[in-house]
Amino acid sequence: MKHFITFEGIDGSGKTTVMHLVYQELLKKGVKVQVTCEPTDTWMGDCVKKCIKNDVDPFVTAFTFIADRFLHVKEIKKWLDQGYLVLCDRYAESTYAYQGAQLRDHLEDPIHWLQDLSKDHILIPDRTFLFDIDPDIAMNRIKHRDELISFEKASFLTKVQKNYLELAVSDHFQILDATQSIETLTHICVEDILSSECC
Ligand code: TYD
Image (cartoon, rainbow, N blue to C red; front, top):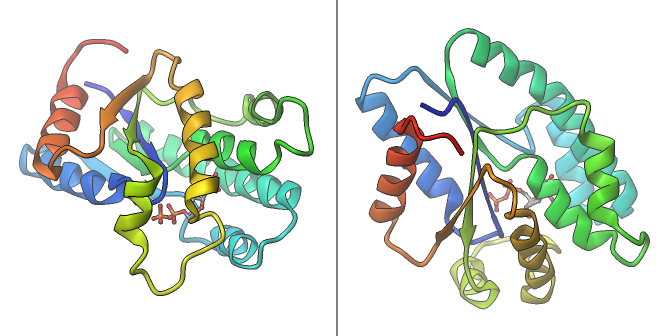
């Protein structure tokens, strides 16, 4: 069984909905499981949300996401030590993909820079599900939301998507076609998490 699982994808990819269904399925099977998310529901996560809402400088936004994760990882380690399987809605790859896209006019290799800043302070997930979807379809799914943040534009999400696909060469990734039904996606994730097969 895999223990630390992250769910990634552009806004509107459906990862949050599927992650909660996966959580319910695992609970039904008697698995000791904890769900969590980034930005976190803490004061540090609130700082992150303020950065996003107010289009704060991308470097400050990146450092704030990394600081939020720095504290979050301590919690995640505690849950894993207590025997919980941890499902996390967004994690380090969100920073590499989103802030990598934001910083690409400022740095030569922003993803590498962000990975370097993070590497001594994060846990590598046993599995990262990447919900792969065309940014136009994703935008169609979220356009009715009340307040769209500045990241939620097809042109930006296209850059984010490209970064995700570059990152997904790492062994812990599984790319999922996010246009499949939520039942199918949930089933694939649950089977994969419970399988003993290593990434
Ligand atoms: P989130 O609350 O997960 O939004 P949603 O539920 O709509 O996916 O994340 C808020 C936004 O923050 C989202 O556009 C992705 C972005 N984000 C980053 O830019 N970097 C990060 O490291 C994380 C965790 C999220």
